[in-house]
Amino acid sequence: MNATPALLVADDDQVARELLAEVLGREGYRVRIASGGAECLRLAEAEPFDMALVDLRMPDLDGLGVLKRLGAIQPGLPVVILTAFASIDTAIEAVRAGAYDYLSKPFRMEEIKVVVRRTLEARRLARENLHYRQELKARHGFETLIGQSHQMVETYKLVARVANLDTTVLIQGETGTGKELVARAIHYASARADRPFVVVDCAALPESLFESELFGHERGAFTGALAARPGLLETSDGGTCFLDEIGEMTAPLQAKLLRTLQERTVRRVGGNEPIPVDVRIVAATNRDLRKLVAEDAFRDDLFYRLNVVTITVPPLRERSQDIPLLAQHFLEKFAGGAGYPAKHLASEALALLAGYHWPGNVRELEHVIERAVALSSSEMLLPDDFPEHLRGRSERAPVLPAARMTLDEVKRWYVSKMLEEAGGNKVRAAELLGIDRRTLYRILERQATDEQEE
Image (tube, rainbow, N blue to C red; front, side, top):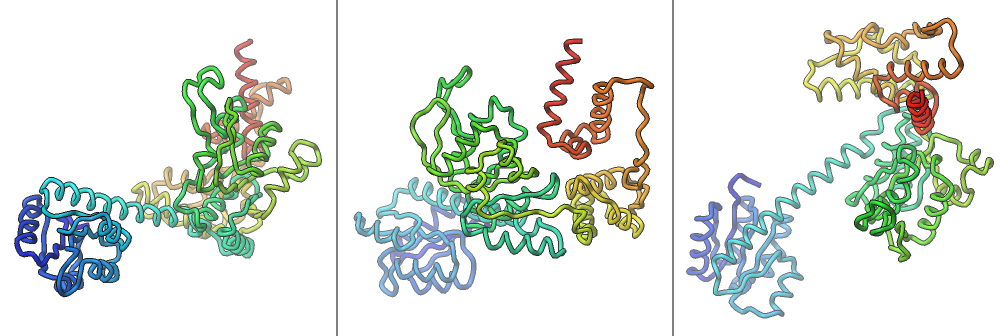
């Protein structure tokens, strides 16, 4: 929209159109007037407008005819129909034909001002919403999946095939491979793209809170439940719910989730009434669910319900040809976004990155590039700008701080060492330790309890 909104007024009544032009002009709008339908269309073909006010009955072309033609000339242009023959039938006819609103003569000036402001605000919001949706699709769609390896091409094909099927999808892959990016790409390529995409981290939520967070609770369901609250599944209604690390879900919650998938309803904690939900489930795991099923650690009926379509995201070490593309992508992301001068990867640095095995996968590569961009003062990133463990110097066993340590003391020291190397980032530390996040959280909780007892 222009800084000064442009309005188009079409009315064969000279007094009415000049009155509208005067009143709206005093409100700060730029107003063009037309004495009939044909002239109105000529003006619309010549310049853009932010809204139009069109009389219903004009001799050469009536308001409904103008309304239909304006939609072809300037798609999305909101039109308010004006008429001296006010009736419910004409109002219904105008709105059904696509009119945004309807005003009857004689005009009430305050009502006209309100209707114009409301119409312009609605158009602004509609434009912002469209821009936001396009931005979301650009940010989370296929463009965020970087890679040209045959493994990634196969992943793209699967995402494209399942996006509009509305079926449940299970995404498998090691930590840091980009499972959430795949889930977002599925959502934003589907018919649900304009609806919520809700992420549930099954490993991070404390078990005591998980049920009420996922399914919601009624007032008084437990101490502190002062008001009813919808859960994340209800919040996802119409959209997609991404259940990350679903292998960490406890048996009782697995049973309740299975019931939700079968009945398409949720029951809040403390409630008896089923609440219908229209939600697509996309789940992800870095664990072998078949093995968990065999060990009775995961329900087989839930596994088969989730495992309708499976997408396996390959680890970075199996698609090393994508490392240069990913490195360049992250370099542009961090150097450009943070206001750093443009940076480039020296060929030796690129070779270093391509030769590393990346146990933390794409997420580890992202962190490494971000660190190098932040710490390097040169425009050219060299091997020395990257952490020592990439250059093979960390292969030596770390020196223990004491000659004699118990097994528990070694474990505590090593966890602290990895946390320090990860800059306090628990997700990254879990990757370095080769364990999942929930296991690390349990270790840290036990250590904190032990320290308090000591």
